[in-house]
Image (cartoon, rainbow, N blue to C red):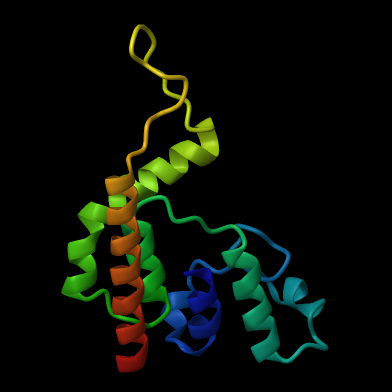
Length: 145
């Protein structure tokens, strides 16, 4: 998603750039001429592209609404078909978040509970299919956009 945003955002409508901060000024979206001055030798286009890439380095996609915002910020449409995948993407994204931040530990204790959460093959195959569908629909939006 980040790669698509880095590619599409520089050429999208300027209102999609409202949350992007000036290069090397994380989280600050309002800045003065004095702050811009240090980049005076850069082309404006290069400054925008580098600022977008810097901004995207701090972005994460923890729920389907984050994906929707990323798609829209790329100047693309969140189609009904993409929205239909959100209920399937939500548990996948939640599990990924749990793996990354909690090492996939199972907080349930006692007999029959393992140290790590279980993951069955069918669920993994469903998630792969969902991701494939999401990617295909996103490619369609890119071609239509």
